[in-house]
Image 1 (cartoon, one colour):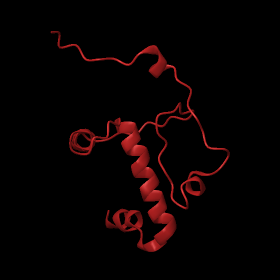
Image 2 (cartoon, rainbow, N blue to C red):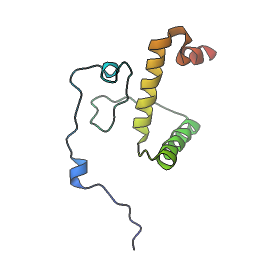
Image 3 (tube, rainbow, N blue to C red):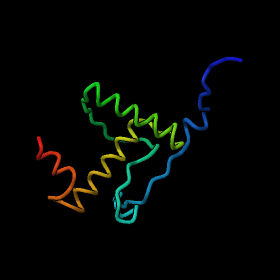
Image 4 (tube, one colour):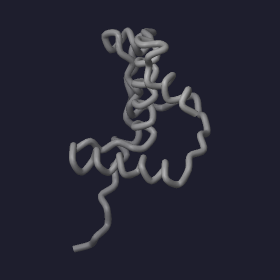
Length: 105
């Protein structure tokens, strides 16, 4: 018995991805934004994080997989977190978590 990981086949790697028809994310999700899932993304940003932040992100990814059965990558976790924070900002403005935390610094 080998300990090699099972890898996705060609059909998984090259599958077609669907997209929502010209609706902003918040309209498509019934008033709430959703982070994009497994699809090709056309825009890239670079974000520098501390070692501790990267470790925490990886820990969260492993917790999602181990305790909740959600196999997601770090990018998916970050996109969902962005969607949550933007929804909170839009809905709560001055009282949003983002505004309060940014004012603390």
